[in-house]
Amino acid sequence: MIDEKKYEGRTLGHWSVTSIRDGSIPWNTADEELCADAPLLLEEVKRLREAIERAIGYTSEMDVLTVLCRALGQKIQGVD
Image: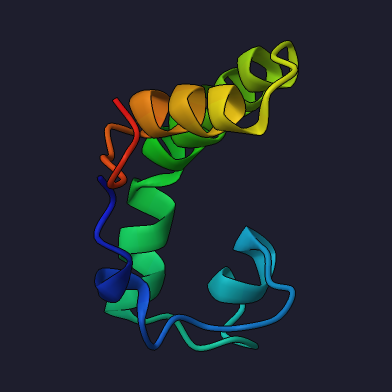
């Protein structure tokens, strides 16, 4: 599970390495955390995308919910 709180206060909007280097956009700790975690965030996106693709193969809404819950490592009352 990714702790999203460490990204609070990040610089919003479009920015690039160039804009950080030339000082046109301020850089803070939350931005550093976000950049450092980019590989983890990409893996999470891939994991969620795979879970959704597997769930789409099911016909029952409960089956989709079950697959998503298992893939996300979460439990919902009434779902195995």
